[in-house]
Image (cartoon, rainbow, N blue to C red; front, side):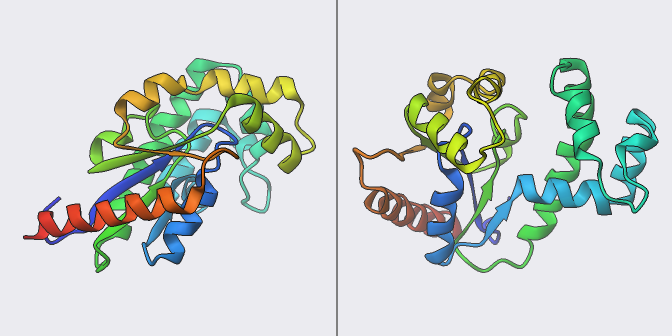
Length: 206
């Protein structure tokens, strides 16, 4: 990206870590926020090229008669089959990448945020200037998810955790780490990162 574009910052974290909570604080501070997971869902229903690819790869059952994505069908297809997971990721993630680049155009804030659960797993972190990892102890994360999503079981949450990168691997590739647990105050950590990002972006524009 040129010096005229905003600084690109990714926010990620394992399930239940609280990346959405952290993202909302940055948004209150004024930073534009792109939610990659939400946009992916929108694109799967509204991007004609992506829809065509999903229909071709997974059949008509991938969508309801009214055009809505059949999330239950697709989840059953891809969750336990790594080949199917890779197939749909190869369709969705490039579309999200293009959408994010278009979204960044015209943004005047010094930096923008891209919130994504699988920022490292998809390799999209390589296109960003900095990455912030939100982390929390595993048991805390499990408790949060079970409280938030009562339809899930502990086994289902652990299954999701196992499919995501190990925390230690994420830490090695992250520029900032925010500890979202009862032992650490969240706001001071976010404000510290915010100030650093403002200084970094000023250096980029200089």
